Amino acid sequence: MNAFSRRGACPALSAPMQTGDGLLVRLNPVAGGPSSGGLSPKLLIGIAESALRHGNGIMEVTARGSLQIRGLTTDSAGRLATEVDALGIAVRTGVPVETGPLAGIDPQEIADPRPLAERIRAAVEEAGLTHRLGPKVSVVVDGGGQLVMDTVTADVRLNAVRASAGILWAVSVTGDSQSANLFATVDEDAARDVAVAVLRMVAEKGREAHARDLSERQLASLASWHSVAPPSVLPDISPTRGEIAHSRSPSPISTAAEGVPAPELPISPLVGEMSGRTEGGASRKPIGLFPLAGDTFTLGIALPYGSMPADKLIALTQTALTLGATEICLAPGRALLFLGQPTAANQTLQHTAATLGFVTSATDPRTRIAACPGTPACASGRIATRDIAETIAAENADILDFTLHISGCAKGCAHPGPAALTIVGGENGAGLVVNATAKALPAGYRPGYDAARGIGRVAAMIRSTRYQGETAAACLTRLGPAGIAEAYRQE
Ligand code: SF4
Image 1 (cartoon, rainbow, N blue to C red):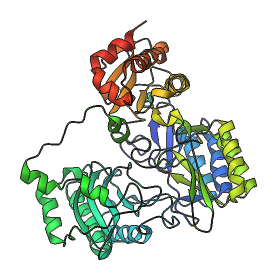
Image 2 (spheres, helix red, strand yellow):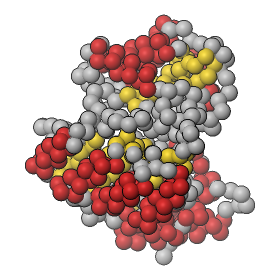
Image 3 (tube, protein in one colour):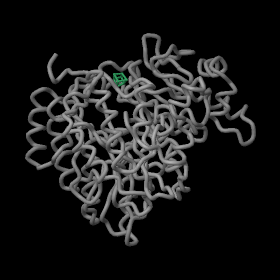
Image 4 (tube, rainbow, N blue to C red):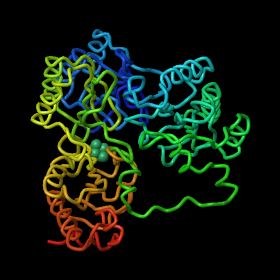
């Protein structure tokens, strides 16, 4: 096995990953501007031009806010790396310690998470953990504010909370903000120590290990070692952070003590949003205008299904540059945040983006659909995922209040977690999986070319049977897998 075929690794420039449409490279630029992950428009254009020259011209922004370039060969990946290097773009290496896209510049954040993130990076390096941890072990440091990191999964999460003693950090392990287990609320020094202690324990279990592999006893020892703050956390003015995570995430210690099993979730508005977390969740989507200091705004524009041809990305970035944008920040939720342009320019930029096919509204139905490249882009694909997605988004926007996953095959690249509904390509055509992942057994099938019509049938049933005020997601729960599959198969 060589570096180019390593599975489970984050394909940084030096180690692209094999996919169905060639090699894929993932870039996490180090902050160049005031935000935590920004690029100048000229640099983004430079990268996109390299993607056009050396890849298949498809660029992506992932759910975690990384930039991906697809369709490379071993040779062209090398040339791309040389060009990116020549552009002077520093990419992040080592254990990812991620902060929100507006970290340090959001007037609504509880605390600037960047100093703590930097201290953790330094401590991880100093402890010699970088090469002892697997490539997918990560830390999220979330200062709260307008664009939080709720939907980004991590081994260790640190969320700023306001407390009577000042700013504290709620430390939890394994998952996103809903599923992670909170076990300590501590000051910044202790937060760094606890985070590094967790990573050290993970490293001791080997490079395949994650924080989920730690025992309750190990976590309990960390919680008791550090002083846990009294529950005097103050209400947070932001809608989704602070004490909310505190109250929703049971301690693994208390759960174990009480022997409470994890609740089984039915299909609900929460499932689609909170299970696989491709888009948004309870958090605000990074699409639209967000106020910054000094009466300025950043404008968030998303890539449909996280993907766009490089020439369209160049056209949008060129317009942004002309309008005065100085920085473009990659945002979790498959979006780009444009910074620096005068407020009056935002409408023009938004209009250009919409014309080019980008997502400019948080209510765009495409934000509710996770779709991988599928056929013909991916050799493993059995269905034309993006075409199916476009048809469904155009015809059934009114019922899409849940996440619909359209997967070219059972691998489920676009949405590894469960979704309320998943269309998955396979030998029998387009299977429909209810409330599970793409790997689950479908409840019904249709020919691949006809999958959008099947969802149309499900949508028609929702419209005709849902109660007043009932969400489509709740209606799906009521109908159950058998009823949904029957509608899906209808001629
Ligand atoms: S899920 Fe989609 S992108 Fe992933 S391997 Fe299958 S067809 Fe290709």
